[in-house]
Length: 272
Image (tube, rainbow, N blue to C red):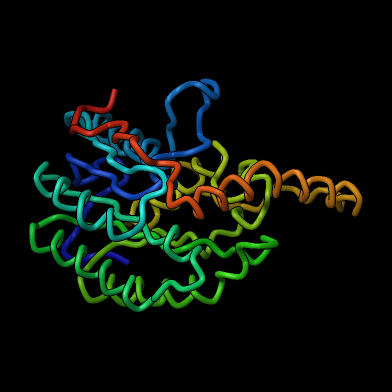
């Protein structure tokens, strides 16, 4: 969904200054193509690169890009801290994807989350900034996260409605067929692999009304043979031990994986 006043072509995107805000999804957690100790990349970085490439190919200056997303952030922190900082940078495009960490909590008030998100969208739009929102992913195949499926569905309905009201764009993560395949997900089963992030970047291009780089960007992967039950049980046990237990322990202690972290790209700089 997009504002009817916007006109752009695949060769020359209209945006020149893009700020990505949010949590680990936009920070790009688990997307470290240069090695586990290298900086994360993520779908927003890939999107910025694609937009910049198209601008340069059309004879324009490279896209300026900032990414202030931090893992573990709840929506309130994104709205209170990251939105004002983004507005101060005077971008013409902001991607705002958040709320997933809130929805993982059983007591989450989805309607309140939606109101807070819409408040942020209104602030950005009143500042003359185009906004790219993102729906939640369909976690029907996840043994634990699928418990949030109904809450995510309601949140998604709010997102589509506020996008219509305020002329925002939406990247439809719920509708991506490729993300139903667990090969797109990292070991923690919550964050995407490098390939998953690359496909979301293509979905973002489509959400912005642009032509994707590859028309087959969301084609499902070739099916694999079923995993033997004993192997699946071992994998599930390892997942609980290595990822669920540490996450639950941090929750009980009131800590976050993003404590003391700072944005990886806090200022608008040209995409190289």
